[in-house]
Length: 587
Image (cartoon, rainbow, N blue to C red; front, side, top):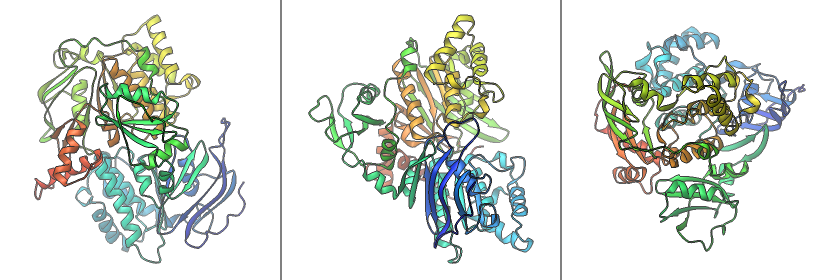
């Protein structure tokens, strides 16, 4: 066990030296001689793939877990001895969904021993700070994802901390809410009292957030791969990031071909172009069939290189998948879909069509109406008005056939957590109408493709997040449907796992599958052939990624806007057309 931890050095709120943590039944330590410092007045970033040890480290700092080796100093003492000065926001929603916003704050105030005479002023300040004042009496479970995270932050700040531990606060949260959370934490640091000395540890799966941190620690499989200024990691790939344009082939095919080359470490789609990270600057020198130009390196490029590069381009899932017969009509069609709950309209007059062999993106802030639209098209919700069809089957008259023609991956892990991986796969094979040899072969195929073999006996609810998502996608494609509905399929998973998912999705689209997807990772929206942006239950913009970015460039006078810039500009433009509107977003 660790000996007496040293007191934190000057300007530090926490210090870890040579930390080791092992769990029974695992060969490698969850943390393997990790050292880290959290200074005051700064945001320290913590990044890494799923299972890297980030949450384990945060739980040790919070005093919820003991290390096996090494020393840990928190606020000059042992972890857990000065809890009133530590704010902790866990990865999973750590509030009580059946309590109101105010009742959650009252509960945390009781646990943190906040004096009664300070409560009214503290609550008013926190609710104003998080813009939750008007939702005091709303049940926490009825809040949108962004508001839940803001409430979680407010509860962590009931007593002003000196150390704030945030375990992926932006998971499942739209870009605007993530930006607001970041601004709130920055305000705490810059506007707090001089004697407070607040230090923040921010764990994140969003590497654009990590890029804004003052310093970053990169973990992988329990080992520390990098620590320092994010700009240092970004600069390590200078002159090796390029953008390909001017090719005649389908962009997905070009990306697949490039990723299968040994000299290409990573690649993504950006509108009509393909962005690549190369091993050497001259990897594509002298080649023809496309135009090549340097691209601005990002922290994510350095991150991917440190982890040994992303996955290759050819999808084993797509290679084993049947080729879809497109037929005559669209794969997915929505005509004036509207859904009301009492006097509240969650989605209004939503219309679009999706051809086979394409990806259609539904984007919007938390609570905009995306999931409601999704559920109507899946047959899980009956539209109040309008109609929908999947694979040519009308959802009202042929709902059973429509559901059989699609694979659905829900926003939250929706498989059976108490069953094993094998039991889940066998159950869903039967639910999709597969029997005997066909069912057995389908389960064997996805088990191999998604590398689930060593986890077949594991209880699904205990899997790491990345493997939960793999299992969910595996279950959705068992019957090789012509249509896939993916509701935030990569929420909370690391960039490498996200690329694996999109490798498979791109491959399936090349086989003729139609994909309807929602995502809060705006770089993923670049993979879509068309997008519609939903806000306050209405469609406010539609087009290709490049068309929407062009609109945003003119609208907000932006030079070469990203999809995140575009998303924010269009939401703000819509708000500007609603002067004085306080209407709450759809639940």
